Image (cartoon, one colour):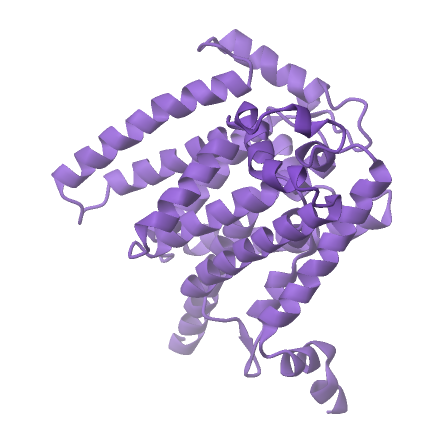
Length: 372
């Protein structure tokens, strides 16, 4: 049929067989959009990170030698002092975000070689998810954190990676978001300790190093969360205060009133169409609906074929990381826009895990049909 030969996705695939160049220009568009939205708002984290409302020259560089938000100012200080314009920050961080995307693509293609239909590989279309590009094309923590996590998960899939990029990735993650470094380190330690091919000596060394990092990370996290010591009531109060601080935001959701299951659903899959009050929320709803469908199919396959599904170590780490991440963040955030921004730290990896499950399910079903 003529329609088959001119189907738009197939035509795009033929035209852009080398999709990475197209992906780069697509990413640049989101750099421009992100910059434009920040200019319209006038006040944002991006303005803070580029010293737009602070006389940065009155501060010494060493004043920002800290972790968290100050570390981003420490990185940006030379560019600000030299007079690089605000838009340059979006270009710089957009390039960092694009490098993160390439790392994530490398992670993906080590696991899933392709999604083929009639001889065409449609996996590259997954790399154009708008939310992923928007938050990795902005001036802020997200591009650096995503690059760090993508590099680390690449290491999880292939332990033959070079140690220097891995160490740098974890160091940057630790300095920018120590709580995320902690959430990554815990499942990594837990899964690797049960590796049969690891010697006892290697496990002991890894445990000592990990627990030393745990102690450092916990103190850093408590400082950022203004919780000076382990006090459950103080932690609960801090979390509730964080949630209620979003009450006057445009897309506030009453997370304190939700059950834990609806909290997890809201964090992972909203905004959906019933939340759409703008064109941007509508597009976010389309993307979330696609991701929700992937999870639904993946969970169905896990339910029916759980005894036949293979769970490699990387997948266990990704699933545990995502679960811990969600359980922590649903206690702190109550804004749909923040949900969309925060999810890029785990959702791209969980999507690949779901696709890995679905692909196994398709193979199991085909084998079953052929056998019958």
